[in-house]
Image (tube, rainbow, N blue to C red; front, side, top):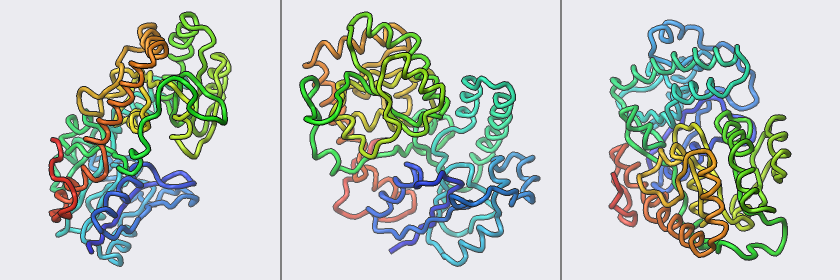
Length: 378
């Protein structure tokens, strides 16, 4: 059984990121032993442990966040673990000097952080924070460029980001068992308990692009939906809603679910999912989750940029045209049901753990189990 060290930077208390869980699932499917190596464990104070890396930061070979962890400490921990391969989750956790040689090293960019930081600057309303995001974006871009020439395997979750970074596209996927429940029917009662909504928006609610999406939803989209289809209902669900988010939700007359344990429960009480993101990088998990649950969707073009072309969803620019697509689906249950079904079929065909496990095995030079499928799309 191969042993893989999963190196990652700081994560919030309460669990690892979606991408970390995904690596655990995929490597487990390949019968690998996973040893997680958090560089700054959740709950610890963030201190300047990597001041000796200042020269590398100036040279552009590491990200600014690397200043809060120690390469010698990482080398010592990896020496004890003695892994057969290393996966570094995000450029924030990468420093080639702290990693072993002679074994496969995978740098998972996850998404293009330089672009993400620039986008956060565009939606940030505080001047000094906006400048800070722009400075981080510039430093991160230099690190992204420098790592492209290094002798390691590079992957990214979003298809568009992978192309920009010269990396292998490795999307987040779902377990096939989750799809066995079948799609929810559009229209009609989905649940005998709890509130039911016409539309649903989900996401981390203190994340800049999601806040920007809610600004667009409250300003240009939802008022038009209600004008065309009075008494339409909306749910906004996600962790850490800001004061501004709460105000936007109230202005739309929507319900706020500020934390939820089961996305499928929300989906079972919803007719249409919305992703009116005016800007985005990487792969939008909300779009994949909605499709897996059988929800028809209306999304912005950037929301599907991380997926393969032709993903089953209504795609519309953020504005009144987006609202019209929402109303069309709400008023046409048959079309909505068909779109939701095609979304689930797309996930089943191209976005399951089992479908991508052979590609992951190939990254490390392993032979995948004969029980796993081989027809992984490029």
